[in-house]
Length: 185
Image 1 (cartoon, rainbow, N blue to C red):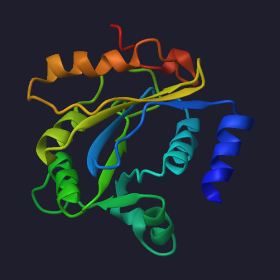
Image 2 (cartoon, one colour):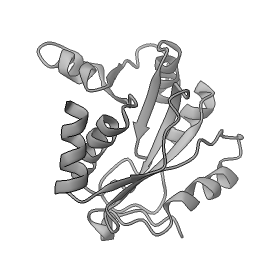
Image 3 (cartoon, one colour):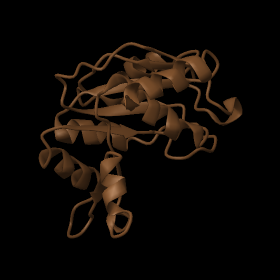
């Protein structure tokens, strides 16, 4: 019922489409989402998750998961990040992967909705530390398409791997194009 509703709104009302798939047998991965230029990206992710039926997750500071909203944030795929002790963010998030049987982390390497010229590297090192593939996901407002890419295992050579991953995002336009990261630079 909910899936039919999502499909009706996403495909018929909004006029969007989804290309590619996420293999459900891949239980753990980092979903590299670009471009991130608007709050509209959040509900595109919710629709994509609802239509594909593949659980997708996000992380947020642990304080957001307290009463009364904690249950809702978890239900929406959220996981609290706790950076106590000597864990840095990458290690703390890799630990979340360890503690779940299924965890597909959606993260925007842009780290902001403002214009940037370089991606943050955390998504890459999280995947490397957790030993999970990176799946590129493009929200292309220009063609009203969510493009789901193929899984890619990082090799520890960030510069070379990034070139391969960014190929998926060529020609993609964000909701606010002038704020989007340009993968062709």
